[in-house]
Image (cartoon, rainbow, N blue to C red; front, side, top):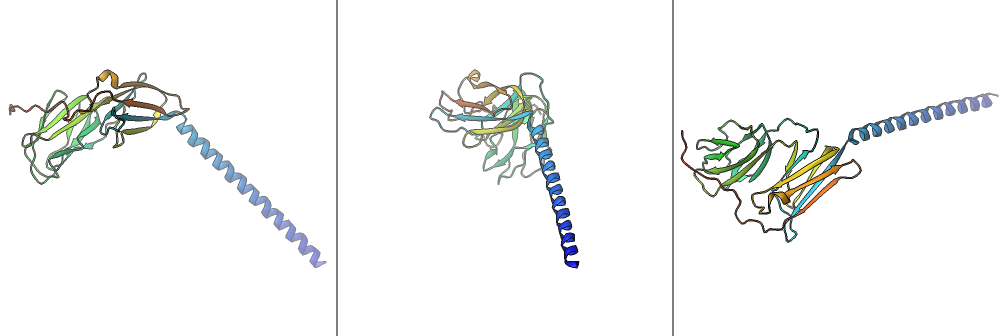
Length: 240
C-alpha cells in the first residue's frame, strides 16, 4: 500500500514539473518573439546604402567624399567633432568630411612645427606656428570646401569638406563606403575628391530606399585620376 501511494505521489510531482517546464519554455518563446518583433520594428523604417567608386581601370578609389541628402523631409543631425592631424609633413587624413558647425582639432604630431592656414570662402583662418596640441578647435560653420596649407611647407595640402547633408563619409582603400540605418525615402548622392577629374554632374546619383534591399550606387570614373590634387592652397600675405 505504501508503495502504491509513493508511486502516485511521484507521478503527480513529475506531472507538475513537466507542466512548469512547459510554461517556462512557452514564456521564454513568447519573450523571444516579442524581442525579435521589437528589433524588426526598429529597423523596418531604415535601410543601408552601399557606394563603390572605381577608376576607369576598375581599381577602387579611396578618400572620396560621399554625401547623402534626402530629397524631401530633410533631416538634421548634431555635428560631431573631428581631428585633422599633421604627421610626416602631411595632413592626416588628407580629406576630411564634417557636418556644418563641427569643431575640428588640429594637433601637430610631427617632428617639426607647422603653420596651418586656409583662404577658402567657407573658412578663412590661420594657426600660429606650433607643435603639439596648443590651439583650441576651429569651428566650421559654413558649408563648402576648405583647402588647407602650411606656411612653412608648401607641399602640405589638405581638404575639409563641410556639408549640410545629414549622412556622409569617405571611401576606404577599396573604394567602398556603407552607410547604415538610413530612413526610407529618396536620396541624392554626391561624390567629390581632389583627385577626380570627371565633371561634377557625372558624380551625382539618386537612390530610393524601400526597406526591401540595400540601395547600391556603383560609380566608375571615365577620366584618369589627377596626379596632383586640385584645388591647391593659395598663400598670400595676411592682413594681421
